[in-house]
Image (cartoon, rainbow over all chains, first blue to last red; front, side):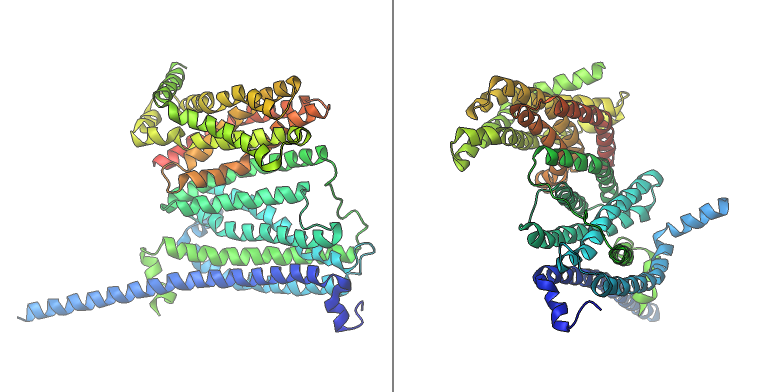
Length: 72
Length: 248
Length: 221
């Protein structure tokens, strides 16, 4: 083991800012990107779902109108 | 042989690739996580302290994979673009546009970590070194590709225009690298030597595993993005309306 | 070949009718180079050192100004579609248009550069190298720029987008062009830079019209 204590590990031999600055930004970036992509996917799925519901409603309305007309 | 060809073209259609990509994504996330755990463990707990650079050299374990991936993704992007132009497959263009943001992110990370490495080692955040400068221009090439595709409304034209730009870019990348290197040797003074110090074998292993982690990550996230792009572009088609995700 | 000459003659004629566009790019070149001494200070040694870079960067920006117009007018009035349909290969016609663009935006810069070089205290030899480098480099700029102009044809925000696409690709031309003058001033000889610039020009002359044609066909689809 090269680290004697957690404090020593986090100090990184005096290079803490640089090492954790690099690894931290990488971690944040690599965590954010999938979240943003997931958000994009959900957005398009949601609009597709909405479209589908709208289509169904439209169909129902036109069917009802049709039924009323033929019943008359 | 013939069967195989048909088989491949079957997956080249967005409709059949969409579920396939969905099945592959968790595997690539798993691989990325596994390689990442091993890579981080090697880079922080196994790789010894460097004789000259102390602990600061550990930035190499993200810097090198990020710069490798930024270059590799550009090649893959150009390959998809060329394939799309040659075979006129829709999926190729979608893959190219799905890869671009990830490639740009990798280029950005390479520059960022390079700056954080340069400050303690050379005393400055930025050096006009041949490799750093080429990486910066590569970043600009990614931005140009993304901006061009964003400016074109018709997705087919966006794919093809992007493909031409990517191919022109990939021809230019070696020329740019060579010219920047030439420029750098003419202007002595800002040249820096990296990695000349003897590297322990464990350092190489750490770098390798981190690079594999970045690679798997890039595939996973590009597949995720390509799925979103497929849905956006095929929103009007029947098969998208029949998807379980849409129905529920 | 006649068709190519006709394209060049036509573009030159059209430009002569609207001289202001050509002159604007030239004045831009003059003004940008004259701003640098004001921003940096009048020390002759420093100005001499930055002269090649300043003149080249200004030349890059000045050629950018006319790029967007290369195909825009022909696209608007339908000439471009006629060109695509004409029996002459589109690549040749595009080559003619690129040549015309160079004569209008590159050649004047080559001729004007020595005068501006005097402002920066360059000696006669350096001015000669500067002209030669620009003579080799500006056609390269027109060739690479044509690809960008064709790709951004008819797009919103085309001008800014065009510079984003094209300027990174101009880097080698800038390095070898400005490097030639610097190497000459440093007494190293400009031969290597100039021959590399010529090699790049040959490469671009071969590939750029082809890529431009492909991009134009996509834009017209």
